[in-house]
Length: 234
Length: 70
Image (spheres, each protein chain N blue to C red):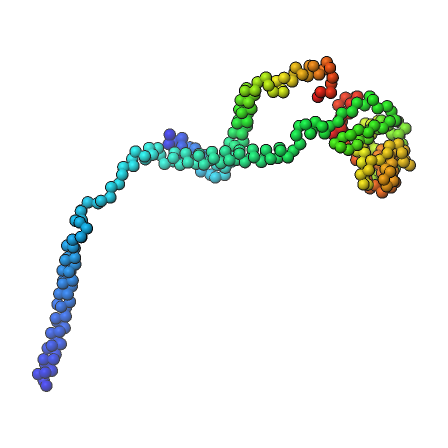
């Protein structure tokens, strides 16, 4: 029993001492196995030591300028393209807008020149302007006084006679009733001016609404006197 | 060369606002130059055939005969 115990302990000691040696041997054998693997011959031919990649020579294509000048060139090209497209966009938009506006012949027809010498005092003239009748009256001094005599505040569409004429002798108005667009009759009505036969609106000698359904005075177009004998409407 | 590029970069391109402003200013100037140059070329090719070239002949006649032609 004592012997077996002694041999048992001795075995234990032996095992403890031998363990490092066996592990060292195992590592050594492992290293030996790795060394074997490196001598493997590829079946696809011998592995050469130098690289098989051939890098071409790009120096011919390489820029000789500084990176900054290349950068400036790129930005310049981009900026030039922006410039060209801005000009193109502006021209396109402008062409469309010009296309929509009136052409020169239409603008020329939109003006009417009237010789004033042919209109005697106290007479009406009706001319056509942009498809609408225009009344021109050469007013007498009595009519001018009559137009100025009226209390402006009492009118439906209060407007003094001076606001409606440039030269008090010449009254220029669109001959379209402001009620429903009929053409009033001159020198008629209760107020010595114009009378609309459709619904009975009476306008006075300044073209202001005095009686009847029309809400506003007769409209005054833009006109000018280039010289003493002519008037241009439009 | 590199010095010029550096100056251009620093003054115009470096700040985007300045870059864009100079693009639009350049577009404005380019448009005027392009339009006037192309008009000049057109007038040179069509010299003597346009209304502004022959206008004096007709307007002198119009003064003699009638004055409606305006």
